[in-house]
Image (cartoon, rainbow, N blue to C red; front, side, top):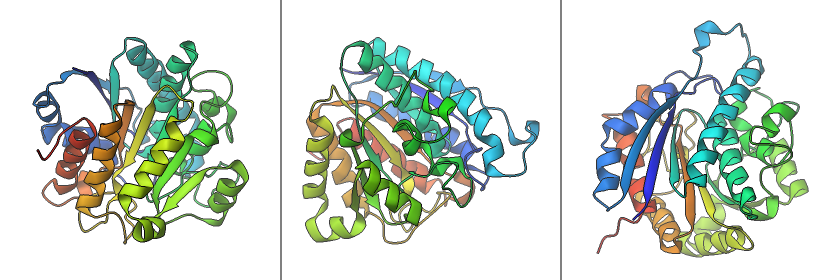
Length: 301
């Protein structure tokens, strides 16, 4: 039996389309807590991390929000570190993907206190490997993985403590199909393994997931799963801020989560980028809850 602690982060400062701040509410409304409890888990909803609204911040471009996002990520890192220290599992519901710079930093810090490292499965249409210097848009939700690896705005890099939170050798990006030139260069230069949708098409989701899991569990104390709903094709998940055609099918997405559950090594999870304003009858939030359930052990038989 696992004790799961839910944390909402109503973050929309990392990108330019409003609505994603309502993602935590939409996912909760889709019966997340009840679905997880039906699997035998103990679920505690710890509420939401405080996030200032856009209207209270003097900003004209994406990077103007960087300092505020850093403050939120530090608070989130403190919370996830404390949850993991209790041997509970934090399930962080966003909000945009910038929050992962905090959630993962806190989990990594908790494992470091045990003398262990953290592996990360970054399941996303995008690489999120930009820095403030390399980004064309300035949107911070395209930067969290770079910061976790130690590159970029140093206060955000150190959201969970001094230095990089994770190592490239323990990271796998799965489902990528929209990377800009800087992200391609960073992936090569930093040694980040990227499993594109082409590779999934050619090899199959099962083979890709098995190889990625082997990579991120080699020498680590557990896996963090950072699930961006734009990993799934927009025909199945229309309610996301940055949809990209050609994503994972409904069954491929569930297989990815089921394969993770089979390892028994997931210690924390993010669920991000559900945008109810762009959704159809809460379809994307419903799918998100189903995928989280699969990651936490729901089986067909």
